[in-house]
Amino acid sequence: MRRMTWFNATSLTLGFAFLYLPMVILIVYSFNASKLVTVWAGFSTRWYATLLQNEAFLDAAWVTLRVAVISSTIATILGTMAAYVLVRAGRFAGRTLFSGMIYAPLVMPEVITGLSLLLLFIGIGLDRGVLTIVLAHTTFSMCYVSVVVSSRLVSFDRSLEEAALDLGCSPAEAFRLVTLPIIAPAVISGWLLAFTLSLDDLVIASFTAGPSSTTLPIKIWSSIRLGVSPEINALSTILIGIVSAGVITASLITKRASLRQQADEQAAQRT
Amino acid sequence: MRRAILILVPYLWLLALFLVPFLIVLKISLSDAELSIPPYTPKLDLTAGWAGIKEFLAGLDFENFEFLTTDDLYWKAYLSSLQIAVISTVMSLLVGYPIAYGMANAPDHWRPTLMMLVILPFWTSFLIRVYSWMGILSTEGYLNQLLIGMGLISEPLTILNTNTAVYIGIVYTYLPFMILPVYSALERMDASLLEAAEDLGCSRITAFWLVTVPLSRNGIIAGCFLVFIPAIGEFVIPSLLGGSRTLMIGKVLWEEFFNNRDWPVASTVAVILLLILIIPIILFQRNEQKQREAEG
Image (cartoon, rainbow over all chains, first blue to last red; front, top):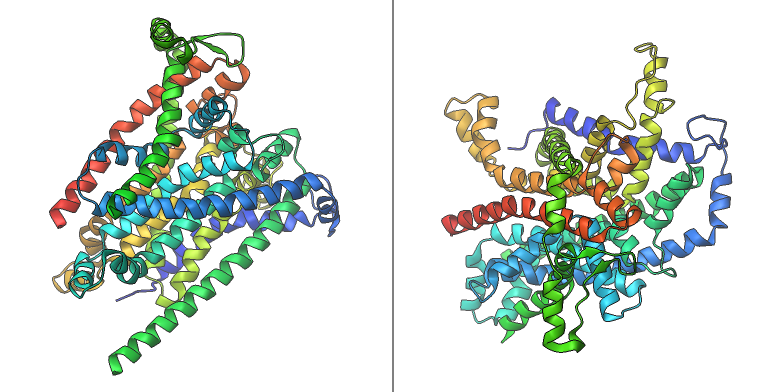
């Protein structure tokens, strides 16, 4: 019994207004002709033109994108493995340490994670660059992934897996054919979370980035520090545009997949 | 064999990239500050063999920990971070729960879209979003322009560079962390339980408190942890939205590292902060474990 009452409608409207209003204002003011961010002086696209000529921003964007895709993919694999181990592997030597290491990076202030990794990289003589940022981002985001995935694994009916094993599946097959499809939404949202965290991260990236691998947040931070620039509004509008396109595509793909699954289930029932 | 690989891969990764670096920080917290690169002493020299290790251990002491108890800046920073984190977490729950509830009760075909809408603002660099609040909350900002234009106030409100701006910034930034776990708990809930409660004479509001809230308890706990934990060590939000009097431990740490270059004291601050946070985390973990065992 799902209810769409006035209360739900109001809370959704107000909630999404809160989440979206600052971004709408950003987008509107990115087309402002004035250099003063809070004074409207007519429509203009001049900030986009200056932005596209700014190679430092373009380079930083490319670095950020590569880091986010690679680190979130590795983090999803490692985080799902870790979640499976935490929920299903039972007792093993060093289990407490393992779960401690999954949860501790979540409480670790970013400044410490960043500095401690910087000291490690200095210690083993690894030059700072894209690789070091990827290693750093993978480490903290895999913990977020494993929290998301393990919460799904905990609520999951284990007898389904056992049934698959009884029916002759190997443990790997049971995982691929039964467990993975059921936890897939959590794995996908874990990937999304890891990707977001990597895109957003300023502090850890500041520590682990080398001079040739400045990420977008580092670049943005230094421009905000130097003074408010309408270019940042233009940049964020472009980012919001790209991200919206990506999110809408992803949701359409998911929708199509779930429709196909429903069709398969109906077909299976008929036979 | 497969099980061993499954355990070992994430285990070794975390050992190498989390535990070892953390031990380095722990070591530095027990060292003395020095004006060089890296700015601390002693350094562990393994090539000198056993004598090197002995010399290294002799150089370690708890001076930095004693130093922290004498300077009340650190106590104030800890307490103020705790206070800001608690207030922001409660505010996030109050803002996030109705949104998650609304989402869980929305028609099925809306839900993937709503979920995406929660995650979407989160994708944009959160620096930009914090920066957008600077424009909204400043004295000449959009909010003051709006309120003055409506004739509600005659003098602009000072919100930017106060703790209020920090609360708004934290709630805004971490709201998806609150919404998603609460939503996934509410979504799994069997709606017929509510019907049963109402059939048995509960009003809708009583049914909400007696059925919905307890069943979403895990989501609420997870959400609160996910907001509280990053909020307490937050650096970017207090330095952009907070004022000079906004004291947060993340900011103090950053300043010790970069402005004072006192790595040992900053590491010590971090070690203590972690000791404070690890207790609630272990309790939370135990609680989850117990529940799992009770259910299984």
